[in-house]
Length: 281
Image (cartoon, rainbow, N blue to C red; front, side, top):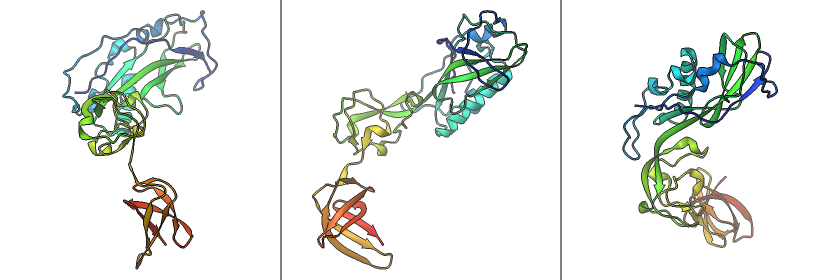
């Protein structure tokens, strides 16, 4: 079952603004905050059984905000809105994740005017993934105001974690990593959840033990090395010509590389195999 947790976090910022507009940041001591006292209270965390390493359960659609109850300060429409936003982020990531929502708290020094309708929204260009903010704006009240509530969305899913430190340039072997459940949203870089995505790849940098593998940490090994004598395949679709030349750079499989042919002409092709470059005409 998916588990969502609500905990206290650091302060949000308050702004005074016209309806549907964000203005300058201001803390106005003349305003009251009675209507937002529930929002500033954090709910106790909910718990669930821990899944097996690397095998988190598939969360059900209605479970994403199981821990965001009335104590979070969000009414039913607000909780439904937040749940929909988190589920959208979950779907974009593939869906097989256990989502956790950590609601922040408003600054206890804030004093805001009473409001009969508070509308939640996501600031432009943001998404509920990792550290984020949820906007709360007053649409019906004597003073139109806007506050930002800090939210952390964690997305627990399968990953591969290094058993030991790995040096830059080291080819990753099967024993170098083990399956584990990690927070995908702790970094914007995609997690390498499939063993085939890192096995036999080269570490692009030195990596410490316990590091979850992400796509920028590995790269494909070069199958063409600068200075190598390579075979050049010229494929027109109806016939194929073979030539030879010297590689003018390094390339992994699928990457482009320039080759100086024995005739002196320089061409650009795709590395397709060890010391083999293919050109299409």
